[in-house]
Amino acid sequence: MKVLIAAVADHAWVENNCLSLCKTFDGILADKFPYVLPRMSVALRLLIRRSETGEHKMNISLADSDGKKLMNSDIKINFKLPQESIPETSFSFALNGQNITFPKAGDYVVDILIDGRVEASIPIYVREVKKTEKLDIPDRI
Image (cartoon, rainbow, N blue to C red; front, top):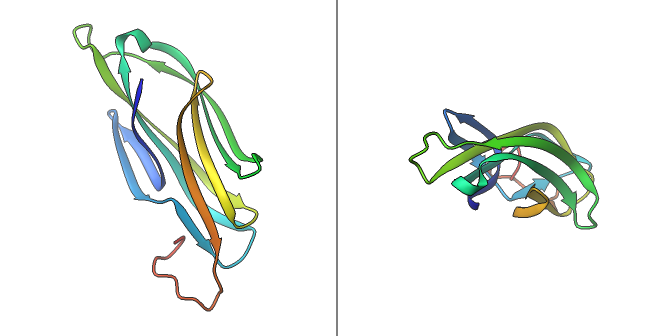
């Protein structure tokens, strides 16, 4: 199994095994805490070999630097090859969340585990800015 894409975005979706991402990010600038992020998606694209087909357990979590989990999802997934003659294929996945609350500024991480093994870790840096500072990009950064 090989991670081809692991990202946090404003929105992600999968259609016909094609992964689409809108506005990926790794930083959040907030003028007050707790800060509520209206929407956040975790996107994943894996390369799966024939020997890795079948049912697996995926866990996606968002935690602060102390390890406290703000979000935790356990998901059963089933990898299948589209044809017997193909030795490997891609698997696309998107988990969409709403109103994710960051209680304070700091370093956070999204961990993606499959069958208990960390396949990807995505950092999110949450920083405080003064309300008088102009933010270039609406919503988040």
